[in-house]
Length: 259
Image (tube, rainbow, N blue to C red):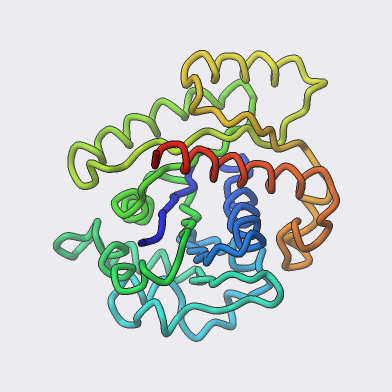
């Protein structure tokens, strides 16, 4: 059985994209799944969130995309998290420029991952907060797209562009790509707007919207500065519990689809 590949993307920044990617990957790792977390964002926040300093890396996802290094020779095993990390760095901007000149540029990540798909159960890709060549590489290899959404006024506007991109990718380079689901992040039940946007999301996407809500939580916000997912930083806090529940919901959905 090969890995299920999930791209985590939203071109709107500040929606908890990286936080969701890192903590979901960590949640699956705590359930004894073999997990690879790929940092495809030049900001490399998923890398620092796992306690790795991107400025001290010998190699990153950049060299993998450019065909200079294999995935197996580049992955790191950060501390106590229990997953493999393909780290990101600012050099990914150069990788994007390099790919623009290449033939079949949208398949670079797919080619790089092919030899290691049997080694993992789940692969999570933290995409840049824009619909660029790096994001296209992630969508070209992914089975599903997970969209973290903050329930605020502008959230729905950006979603239309992302859904259109999925349709284009499906019709051109990856017919198997599905929207895995939408997860509501930084949710504040006291905020009337959160409830209204949440209802609109469910109206538009139905059961694609996960039931699990990720609450606003100080411990979730603090954990990256300690180089740990919140599941390791404070396993009992509301945020950690929510990400474990989201992983469980994803597993159940996958099992139901397989039947």
